[in-house]
Length: 200
Image (cartoon, rainbow, N blue to C red):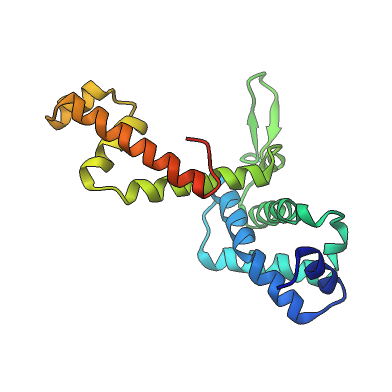
């Protein structure tokens, strides 16, 4: 298997097998980045939209030799996340049915401000993507729990209920609630650390 540096070098030489490997390796990241940006702006889209945007991104990179813009191969993921974010924003711009009145809002100081430029986030898109991945990982863990444990965890984490409130609501001892939450959180930490997350 080629190293990332070798893979990029071959892609720049228009080596089609290397390009196919590059797309296969990075397509999931690009699709997640596009999906995350569309979700972040609550913009209605389909799976086909995400596939079309992703295909357009890779086609543009290939045709215009844009990998030459990346000076450090270790930053490919971050660069692709930025490119994907921009492509998703372009998609929103091209499909949004804003009229002149609707494309402005008033900020806290009373000044009018255009909506479209705000679509570009000042945040690190790769960091945003990692946070989205973390949220998805936590959601998968919650769904893997037994129904009673899942309900207790959701009441505690998502509805900010205390151990005592949960115990009263579910008609079980408070010690049982505390024990389940403690055991579940320890399990979550262990699983998430193994997958490179340490935010819980």
